Picture 1 (cartoon, one colour):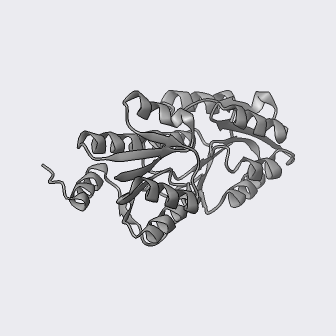
Picture 2 (spheres, rainbow, N blue to C red):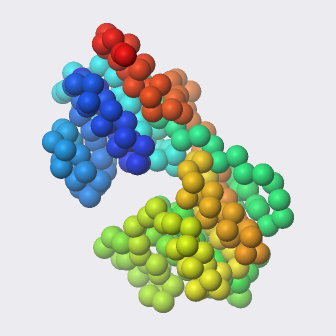
Picture 3 (cartoon, helix red, strand yellow):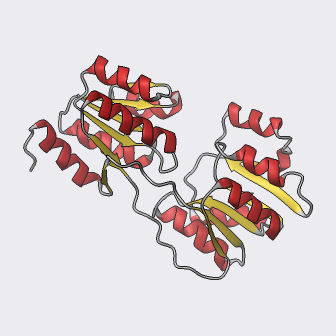
Length: 260
């Protein structure tokens, strides 16, 4: 059985292709919301966060022959847990990784290695900071920016009850919260930046997807300072694929199914 940790749009594409090859598989998602697209197509799926021990139990319970990590590029803990669980189980571990963004250096573009560094830089730049890095690092930004002089922190995150509670916990005013499900089209991103009169955009280097590149390019063209948090490195020991089709072919070879 092929076991896939999903968490991105390309993960859905991968799973559908594997399922179309009539491969035995099961998907794991963190949330029930993410699992719904698989249930609608009757693809086996479980929900809930898995650490190394949980992954190992899942592998042994299902008789997993191959573990595929198709989670978000910034799911660093998941990457290491997948690698370690696959090693412990003695099975191969594949990683479906988005190609890098490859932005050209230019005026207004700042690359940083962590949320903490991004928050400190935004505090120095000042003005209205439009944060699009999600809820995971929100405490870091709220702690540094919500009370900083000359800074207005506006956050955009998924419209979940947990995220709104987090905003309330950090005393982020409702007028500074955008709770929406992405991805967003070019016009929506530009309109949001204009609406809030943003001076600084903070985003993640989540890969070379068109909507991510457009968001950054439009912000730079509008004269904003753009802070990009670079993605964390992947752990050693994972076979990395940047192309879904290549990964599917490798899976077929791994389990002994000829591909056309």
